Each structure stands twice: as structure tokens, then as C-alpha cells.
Image: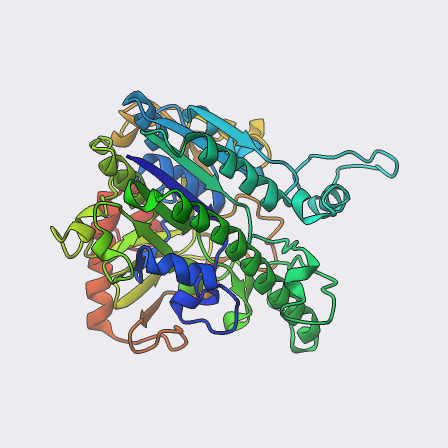
Length: 493
């Protein structure tokens, strides 16, 4: 048995035909749905990029204890566990955050890995001629693009080729796991012109939206962003089709698991928002696409699953496929019993969110978004042995604020003492200064069935009471620190 996971970043499922979109060209996602189970109630866990990837390894929520994090010394790792059981694991990715301070050490858990350079503000290529200080990501991106003129030179195309190289060499072998992970369609929406021409004859002059609310007089710009995003999703679809072709040609459907997933969605003007990280976690961000093919249940291909599942369930699912029990601290559940018919659900509710912002819970019908009860959003701590932000390590003054006594109470760390560092809600507050402060959005309750676009918050005390109880239950399961209950006003529930 073998397994392939094709992962995208910031893929809004409402831009895919299997989830009802008829405007964006995604025939291969439709084709994928014919060869897999399409999950309708699959949710993110911790957001954004690296918090989600930590969950792919550990099979448990990240956002209640930590924001952006390197791999911690006490973390369990699904790929490492596979390797310990004689299964080769290989990572191919152009996700540039893996080689920044806040994404360090994940790749060491794989048997082998390939990094493809050049996405976003990756510090890849050099141009010292006009250098006059710290290089901002957008400037670095412009330098990088000089080396990606032809489609074959784009990071997505190079990642695909490295993934195919592994498949061509090892498709006849057994007991391996391939993680082919694309940064696309994350912004900037850098895409070959042949794809943008499928949607507009007007060239896209700006493909990198800021995380903010755009005004009505910026309509031309926002339409350009949407055009570029659609084009990039179509590019993703095209290269996905080549992988499906390979599965067809080599009949991998009979012995190879295929997972296609993303870490979270992306707002493209819904409710007025562009980007992520600052608005509440609406379903455009949280309810993400997920496709699963298990060769042992071919009769399930082409069907849909309405059971609740989320990112921390991926690690137990892959381990289960190879006959390996989940890690002792993994709280996610294998999804395979949903395919075998042994179970019709694995969760009654799931918890998700960003560190220090709303804590969100859904039972599939209702979604409850609970904010901090005071504007200062306190108390709030990070628990870590790897004190880092996205691109740099925490400075000395931050670390000096750690409690005098190291925290030893967390079971999932095996009671290894960790730093308990007071912090603000954002891992980079200056960047989001104008929009930071989730407290201003308030606590909200939505009926996902009656109001699927989440446009009309409910005032239903009974439903809120029930969802609040589910939130507490899920927080306890995730071993949420006591101050999280205080911050959210749940300490007396």
C-alpha cells in the first residue's frame, strides 16, 4: 500500500465545481470527485499556514497554546511514525514558510524532501544594485519573478515535476507516502497569462491583495484579484489532471490512497473582506475542500460524506491506512471508518480558529464564534520550547517575560517543561494594525443550514447555550490552558 497527499494553500472550496461553482474552470477537480469521497463538512483546525501544518504531523489542535510555531521537540509526527514502521516518506513543496524561523524542523521528519524556491517573498534570488535597507516581501517577489518567465519555470510547475519524478521512479514499489504540497493558490496570484486569458482579455496589473476591506471605488482592482485567483485555481486544476492521468495510466487507484486538501480558504470580497487573519473565521475560510480515495473501498468513489472532520484527522487517517495506531497525544480521528461503514460520524463537533482570536465550534448545523470578553484580550500566553514568530525568533525582551517557573502541566508535552510567554493576539501585530482586534466583531452564532452564507447572526439563547457547552467540551479535549476559559468568559460554565 502507498499514499499520495496533494495539498494546496488558501483554496476556497466555493471556487471548485464539485462544491457547486460553475464559473471557474476546474474539470479535473470534478474528475477527482468521481474517483474519491468528497467531504462536505471538512473544517480547518488551526490557522493559518504553519499552525495547520503542525496539525498534519501531530493530529491535534495547535491554536489554543501557540501561534506560528516551529516543530516542537515533544511533538508527535505522522511522517516520522510512518518511517519508524518502515514506510518511506517524501516531501515535495514550494511552501516558502518551511525555511523560515517559524516553520523550521518540519522536513526533518521525512525520509527525504525536495524544496522548490521562489514563492511569495522567498529570499531566493539576489539584486544588490538598488538595495538600501531591509528587503520587503513584495520587492523580493519582483526579483524572483525575473527567473520564472516561462511556465515550466514557475514554482508550481517545478514542484509538480519533482512530485512526478518520485511517482515515475517508485510507482511500482510499495510502502511509501508522498506529500506534494503547493503554495498556490496562496497570494500573490502569480499565474501564466494563458490562464488569465480564460477569464479576461484585460491584463492583471496587481495580483497581490492586501489583507483589508476594499472600497467600492476599488472595484477594478478587486475584480483583477478575483480574475487572477480564478486563473490560478485553474492552473492548479490543470496540473492536478496530470497526476490523475498518471493514476489512470499506472492503475494506482487499486493500491494507492489519494488525499487532496488545503489548509484553509481565502476571502475574495465575501462580506467585504479580502485575505484572512483579521476577519472572523467564516466558512469561506474554515469549511475547506477535502477529497479521499481509499483503494479498499472503490464503491465509495463518486460519493459524498456529510460527517464532520477536520485537519487533525488527517494524521490518524494516514496512519490507519498503513495499519499503524495513532499517536498517544493525537486527538484527531481516522476517517476510514466513515468509508468502511463502521461509523457514520467521528465527531459531534469540531473546534477551530486562530491563536488568540475567536474560538469557533460547529456541530455541522450551527457555528458559534466566541470572542474575548474584554478589549485587552487578556490573559493570553504561548507555550513553547521554540520561541519564534514567522520569520524571526522572539526577541530577548519577549522571552524574559516568561513565567519564572516553567509550565509542566501539559500532558501533550509529556510534562516536559515549556516556556509560558505572555503575548498579544497577532504574531505580527504591526502588519495588521488597522484591522487587528477580533474583539470588535463580537461573539456570533450562525445557522449554517438556514443561512449558508453566514450573513445573519442569530439571537437564540438556547442554541448558544448548547454550542457553548460543545465549545467547553472540545476545549477540554484539546487541553486548553485555563486562561483561555478566562479570556473567553467561560470560566464559570
